[in-house]
Length: 323
Image 1 (cartoon, one colour):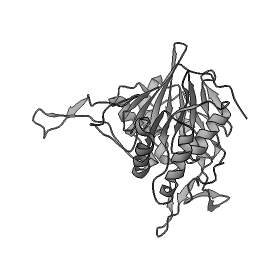
Image 2: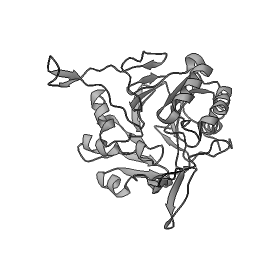
Image 3: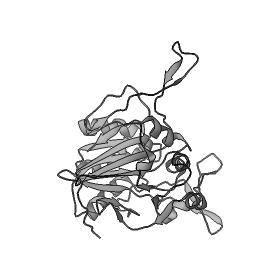
Image 4: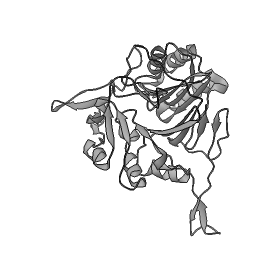
């Protein structure tokens, strides 16, 4: 299968939530860092106020701004872990939530979806927005880790989203936004053989817990930047960042890979042994910009910094990557 993806003039990805907040991180290449500008009362401070730095949590959310033929479109990709974190960071970054046209959820895990709660309140309790998901998004899931009791994960409520006014759009296949200029991958074929999904995961299917390691609802965004190539945005990258990038290129007539932003899920003992192979195969696609976030892990980030040099851009909450 291949598609005709309309090129855009520019893309800006602003990180609304990530695991890291760093006031001292310098600008680098296409990345500009947010600086604290707001103030709040603080009785222990000499002048009676404190700065309002951005919040960080184990989660991910990005505001994506696309410009094509002089027209600007904004959409939200994922919504973070806490009910209020993303909405609060939007306030501190002076992002108007009513400017968002579409919401895309990369997958159903709570660290990418819970902030929809705060967004509803920021919009005044009534939403008129489409939210794009994979049908497996609603699955009840749990983690089964050695030496620990199974831990069930919070699950998003369809009734709550629809009751708030969201129009839920479920699709396993690739789909387009904004006149064919933004591609939602839908379900990503698993072809590398070495990217394992999430082995500890189970889902409640047919009244019992069954293995659900592939996280088939994991989907990414693909945008073709005029004169440069593809920008791929991932949530956790449970489908495997190499799988995702290869699929993006296959769908778009083998367009070059320019930038990859988001979670690469290379943290922890199951995934860290994959780092050399993942970076080798990513390197074969020659990306010019790599912005790993969220679940990528410090060992993978250290290896990327060594392997990719100036193409590697560390991320933090509030980082704005202009491509």
